[in-house]
Image (tube, rainbow, N blue to C red; front, side, top):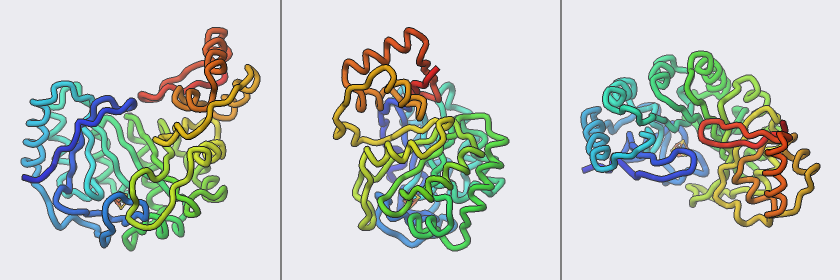
Amino acid sequence: MLNIIFGPIHSRRFGKSLGVDLSPGLKQCNFDCLYCELAPAPTMDAYVDVVSVEEIVSAIKQALEVHKDIDFITLTANGEPTLYPHLSELIDEINTFKGNTKTLILTNAANIDDVKIQDALLKLDEVKLSLDCATQKCLQKLDRSHSGIDVENIKAGMLEFRTKYTGSLIIEILIVKTLNDSKEEIDKLNAFLLKLNPTRIDISSIDRPPAYAVQAVSYEDLLSISHLFDSSLAVYIASRKKAEMTASPYSDEEILDTLDKRPLTLEDIEVLFDEQSQNRVQNLLRKDKIKSVSTNGVEFYKKA
Ligand code: SF4
C-alpha cells in the first residue's frame, strides 16, 4: 500500500498535523528547486501517476480513527499538490467529514493564477504559498520552474486569490545563500508582500540535505533579512537553528527600539534576549509599552 499518510507531526504552530501526500508514488513537481529535500527530477505540468480520491479519503479516515486529536489535515505531496488533478473534489470530500479539524495546503503557488486552483483552495481553512523569488531570473535559477511558469503571473494570481480568500494566508520564503538573499531581491519581495498583505510570512533556510549543492544562510542572516521587510509585515523566522545564537542583554530602550523595527515572536525573544532582558519584556508588557498580537498560532510582540 502507498504511503499516503505521514505523521501526525506535532508543531508549536499547527498543533497535531496529519500529512497527506497526494503523490506518494514518485516526485511530481513543476519546480525542481535547488534546495528540494527530494532527489532532483524533471519538471512536469501534470501528474502522470494519479492516486484516486477514494484511496486518499479512505487513508485519511483510517488515520483519523487512530488519531482522534488531529488539529490539521495538511495536503502536501512528493512534489506539488495542486497538480493533483482531482484536488477540488478531494477537498469537497474531506470537508464532509473533517468536523472541527482544520485543513491546510502547502503549495509552491506556481498554479495560483489558475482560477480552478484558486476555487479549490478557497475551500481550505489555511493556505501556505511559497514565494522564494520576486523576479523571473531568480525563479528559474533557484526553483528551476517548468517552462511557461512566469513569476509575474504567480504574483498576479496571489493578489487575485487574496481578494477572495478569508482564511489564513501564509507566505513561505526559503532563503538560499547567494541565490535570493540579496537586498535587491528582498526589497522586491517586500514591495510585493506589502501589496499582498498576507496573514504571516515565514522565512527559513535549508535545514535538510538539499537536492543540489547549495548552502543555507545562518539564523543571524535570517534575522538581518527580516529587518529588510517593512515592520508592518508579520515576519516569522521559522528556523530550527536558533539555538546557535548567544542571548544578549537589552535595556528597556533597546527592547522598544528593536520591537519598533520588527515585531518579534516569543521564540525570537528567548533566543536574542538574556533572562533579565526577557523579564524586562514582561515588565514592558505589563506597563502597556509592548503589546502582543496573535497571527494564527504565532504570538508577536510589538511596540504599543
Ligand atoms: S516545489 Fe517543493 S517538491 Fe517541488 S522541487 Fe521545490 S521543494 Fe521540491
